[in-house]
Image (tube, rainbow, N blue to C red):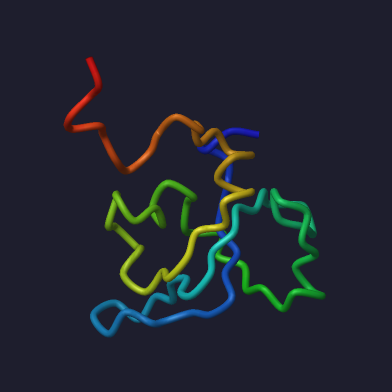
Length: 98
C-alpha cells in the first residue's frame, strides 16, 4: 500500500465555499479504497469516519497545505503505515556536543 493509492477518512468535514466540494477536517486517517478499515485498523463504520475518495493522503499533510486547512491531527499509525519515516523529526540539534 503506497501513498499514491491511499485516500482519506476523517472524523469531520468542511465544505469549500468557492467550489462546494467537501474536504476532511479533525483527525484524519489513511484509507485504501475498497476496504472497510483504515490503514491503522479502525473500522470505518464503527468509528463513524467519513470517506473522502477524492482526497489523497499527501494532500492532508500539514506541510503540504493543500487540503489540510481544517485538519487538526494526522493519525501517527496511519502515517507510519503509509511510509512516514521515524527519523523525520521536526527538530535539529543546534549546539552538538564535541
